[in-house]
Length: 329
Image (cartoon, rainbow, N blue to C red):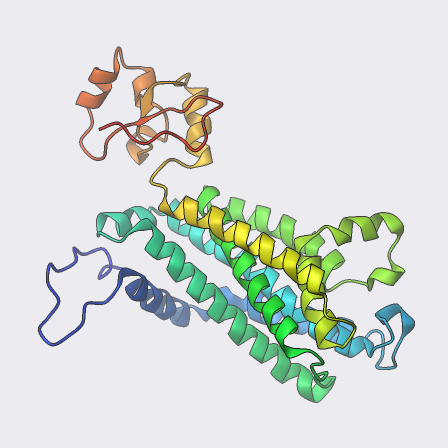
């Protein structure tokens, strides 16, 4: 971490190509995760343990409740998407929120790293975690339940990739908004477990009540699960579901990219600015001011600007303004 916060050299050494900011962050994040692998327990252990328990609860005889396929194979195909949800809704938001809570992201910015480079690094790390956890799950499931043959490769792979990118983007977005690791854990688990029980790892849809079926059908994890499981088990191509997953993933990517490129405040700073009666004035979300609007207590914007020593002040946006206005020079 100390090496990352040092100023970057102006010129790369002779004979060596300059390394990108995202590449440096990816290598640093990989080293940090290898030093503390227990932080990845939820992504690696939870889907495998629950797959072994739930997959063996319904036997291996094809059942009408599982669309006439082997229930164990049904859950093997479904639990790949549980890994996607665990990484995107729990692991990444907690990781990013803990960085924001400890001002690590501010140190990256002070060292000259662009804001988007950290989001790109988290996207790559998240996709790598999903790939490793999926391979581990299939390796465990192969000798126990067997791996079902893939009926339609391309729709299944497209659904898996689109769902992974979408949920990782949601994780980056949540991590950039939530103020602390505890809040990220609370929100992430609140989003994860209903999606897990209704959209992938719970009972099959045919045994649910009508109300639960309607709720499950609109969950993003249900769409991702159907786009992977249906073509994998030969139950169809799920073309319409795949199109919905791609559209949702594109929307999540756009929102995460806009958030990563923005140098503006978080939602929590905007709330603090509103609470300090600073609508229409200027503020700077620094730790010394606790995220409040310094101009709310100043006599004029010029007096507030005269106390600035770092970046320019932001005008507090009014309630109808989104995205927030650019900072004043």
